[in-house]
Image 1 (cartoon, helix red, strand yellow):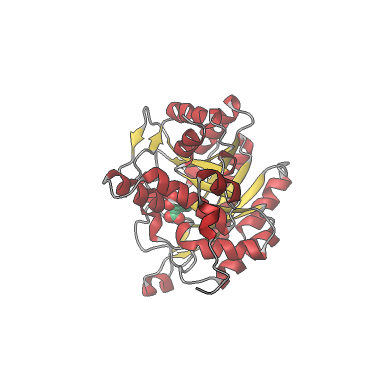
Image 2 (cartoon, rainbow, N blue to C red):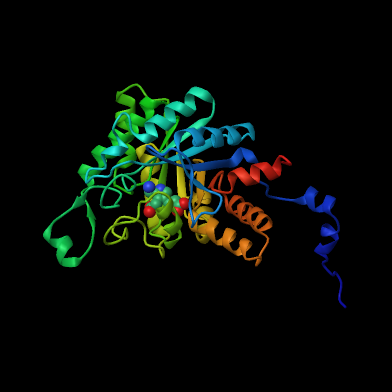
Length: 334
Ligand code: PBG
């Protein structure tokens, strides 16, 4: 055989050399744990499509957040399910709303834990849509759902301000309303919350991977779908535009969501932009691993480590994942 013969196997010969040469790693430091909290719930309730995750009561939320805190998870992301939904999604921005209550309760007990609140109306509207719907002729004729951007923006900003007042460290607008970052930044600043940061769900695709989340948050659209406002799954350039606009509007952190089927988008964003990038390892990605694991078709812990490593390798700084608690336990040897 001709020389030289390249043999990278020499560098894989045992755990120590592999460890020494490992290019990518993730730690608890990079993880954000999402939680669902339900208004007026008296105990926690399992979620069929998200094994190991719960719709929490305020009380059970606090005990689970405590676990995350003790394990060193730096941040939690809150989703609320209101007792009643209405057309205007008022549960999102009423001062005694469930997110506001949960935020205040967490910050009281764990002042230095980063509390991030999702800013969207879909859990709160009776339509299940992320904003106020334009109920006009063209939408009916085309059988499409159009958001009333102005009306939606006003309510999103109101929600963000109420979360900041409750003590949120960071707000995460996820409705895909145009201009949402800019208006939220303005309202926060005008009210003395210039220290509250914005993590924008910038490149949020109209994905089937959100299915289990919609069961967990009781937020499935009652009619139509979200394709008129979320990104088309086939598009890269529009994702880069969304991210660029959000940075211009004042986003401190931008997000790509989902993560696993969109590693190329994370990578491109990493090469193009210098702000921190968050990746959302969404409910469907979690559910696939968990269900195959339960069937014995794969090792769910090993698969999870591989997935989180790949998301880091693609360029994400932060990973929002339902696996955060279990992975933190594993990394801490618990
Ligand atoms: C919107 C929102 C959604 C998710 C996070 N924020 C759902 C949607 O757009 O339908 C999905 C997250 C997941 O699937 O884990 N409030």
